[in-house]
Amino acid sequence: MEVLLIEYPRCSTCKKAKRWLEDHHVAFQDRNIVEKNPSAEELAAWHAASGLPIRRFFNTSGRLYREKGVKQRLDDGMSDQEAYALLATDGMLVKRPLLLVDGKPLTPGFKEDAWSEALGV
Image (cartoon, rainbow, N blue to C red; front, side):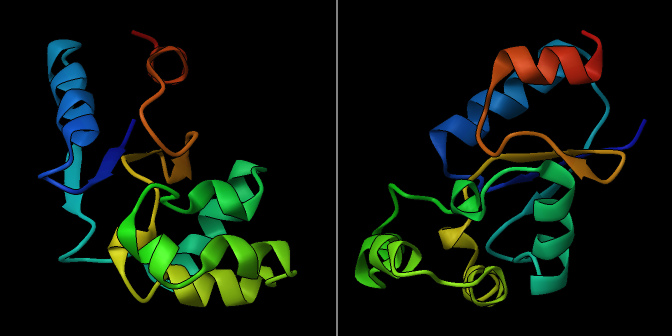
């Protein structure tokens, strides 16, 4: 099983998620979302695999989300393609942590129950 944690190292929830993976002896690779922001193509693939609405991939509590008026833009009918392009501009717009198991994303954010079930721990 290949596990990738996409995280922002200074985020307290990301730190908690990383510690949880380590405590449960889950081998994983980590990727700094600011240094290596997800591409529009990656986001499109993850969104399609997740079955979740695109707005779940946005960091709704972030400064950029508010500054760029993303909620209103989504409410006004932003297309998925436009959302992928916007998310790909800055990792701070993306909900984190994001855990990929064998290339498929779990629910964005740290959801201990979902992570336990997906990882069998």
